[in-house]
Amino acid sequence: MELQPHWQQIRSAFESGIRSSLHRAIGTVSADGYPHVTPIGFIFLRDDYTAYYFEEYTKKLPANIRHNPRVCLMVVNSSRLLWVTSLFQGKFASPPGIRLLGIEGERRLATEQEKATYRARVKPFRKLKGYDLIRRDMSYVREIKLGASSRFSIRT
Image (cartoon, rainbow, N blue to C red; front, side, top):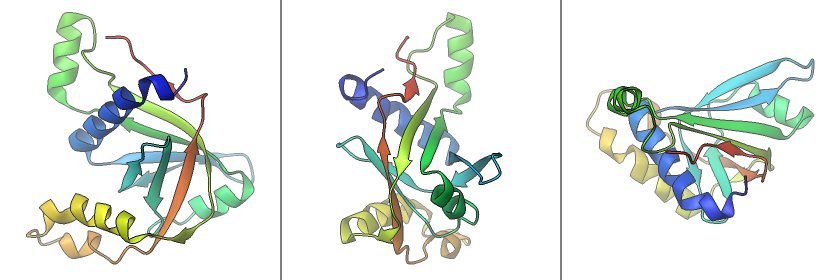
């Protein structure tokens, strides 16, 4: 399906998944052909049908991208209420998950706007003991140009 006509619904489902599960994943393929899934803490969608994430904790992801820049991004809404309600009703009120396909860009320094968006996302955790683990000065990002072959459900 085309991204453009459904972009707001995709973004809404994406954000719902982030709020309910607090994690998302990027799938790549290693040089020897094996699939590899990397959990990504913070990824953001833009209005121009691209995404970006901070590449600070990844190990194998950069090597896999050098070999093959195609990626699959997945976010699932883990809300028990959504799933139980949907099972009772026999349909989903909103898409339960999003799978977006794209091409990775080069690693680059994050813009001040990207850093500000990240800081806003982690701000609710500032009073927690583990906040120092996530509040690092995130410096590098990778962009993902999302493709028309991305998959998502718009049936309700």
